[in-house]
Amino acid sequence: MAQVTLKGTPVNLSGEIPQVNTKAEDFSFVKSDMSEVKLSEIQDKVKVLIALPSLDTSVCAAETKHFSEKLAGKSNVEAIVISKDLPFAMKRYIDNNKIENITTASDFRTGEFLKKYNVEMTEGPFKGLSARAVFVLDKDNTIKYAELVPEIAHEPEYDKVLKAVEELI
Image (cartoon, rainbow, N blue to C red; front, side, top):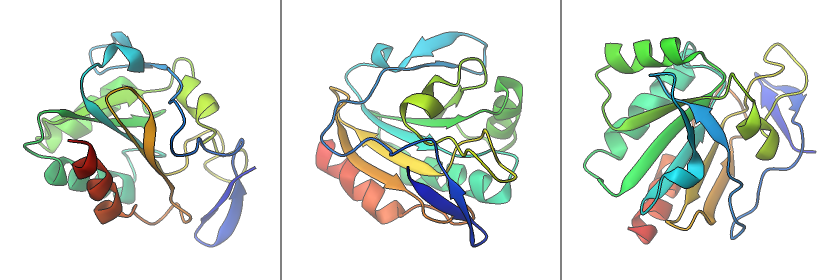
């Protein structure tokens, strides 16, 4: 079972995250308009799956904004921010920050993503929410980059994520 820390305190996750060069498991999520979509329905694009605890935290909000800025202009890349936040809260954040190139994916309904990707925190104050992780998938949904951020209060390795994206586009 994987482990991260929250301000230095160890937090267990539900399992080990998927490895590079494995097929990404399909999952459904709820978009801001309450429609349900599956990962497999997003075709012919490189995908960046950005898992985080909640857009209502400063680190998650900053991470989403940074990915929006760093992936701007890459029309063949689909950036998907995934959390258990309600679709309304995710939409409010996106609208208030004028972010147009990020798809919000609420996992509140099924928890499929957290279960299939083993990023669910199983203890601590954020129990039931996602740890911070990033997966870059090629157009065929093979995982080409996987990062489980060791400390929840830290942001991911943006340069490594962007390098993985650049290698695929």
